[in-house]
Length: 319
Image 1 (tube, rainbow, N blue to C red):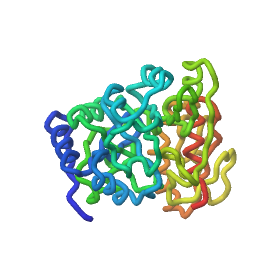
Image 2 (tube, one colour):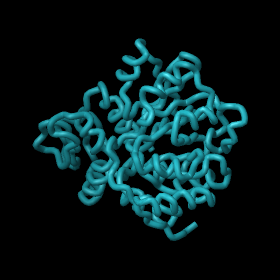
Image 3 (cartoon, rainbow, N blue to C red):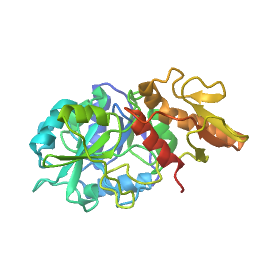
Image 4 (spheres, helix red, strand yellow):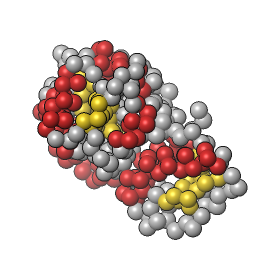
């Protein structure tokens, strides 16, 4: 349903106005350190349903619940010692933990998509964190974009897809990390990587002193971001390209003179991660104008490269 989307400032008045929209069952896009999230009261069935409607998101794809602190998170999930160790090390920050839902949590069933687990995160972005404190409740928030399309890292990216479909946007500037959170399943002391993201698997394994599991079944998501086709631009994508073909525009990495855009000329994976979604949007427009396909240079499969390659593989998947 068409509505006027308010552009809210980053001062206390803007934060208070955003919290008021959430309390009334509305949708607010807000910045985290990863990407912009589309927030709704995670206890309100109608508000959570409105997220799925605004995004065109499949209802079997669960949502991450954002809270202001680990103490708040423990109201909604059962924390093992290992889960507390991970939270202490990486919260606030780009890590989501999928944990058993606590009895009496009061979360909408639409948040968990019928599962007996919930994904929780404490974001580090000052503005997002301030909104969570002002609202003083759990906020379900997938990325603030049309489902399956490139994730938003600026307010304009949000408005490009959702203007007129949501209540408000907190106009917080560009996101720092540029990739969604890492998602871990934690059952007792068993830890599995469900989605690579802003915290590397190597950092997690160093903290725990052991390797972690890496299951994946995109046909039945256990957490957000596991759909096989996701983050997709309009143009088709070919990956691991060292020499672009005729009819292709190259998204480069490293020293590549033929690149139309370059994620990181100096092969800095953090820079590449930060640039990924914004550059995918830009090169998609270029490719459509030229009626071309997008070619993407090889990205190393270590550190943040694991998350970058995950997003690129989903962007290039059959639709």
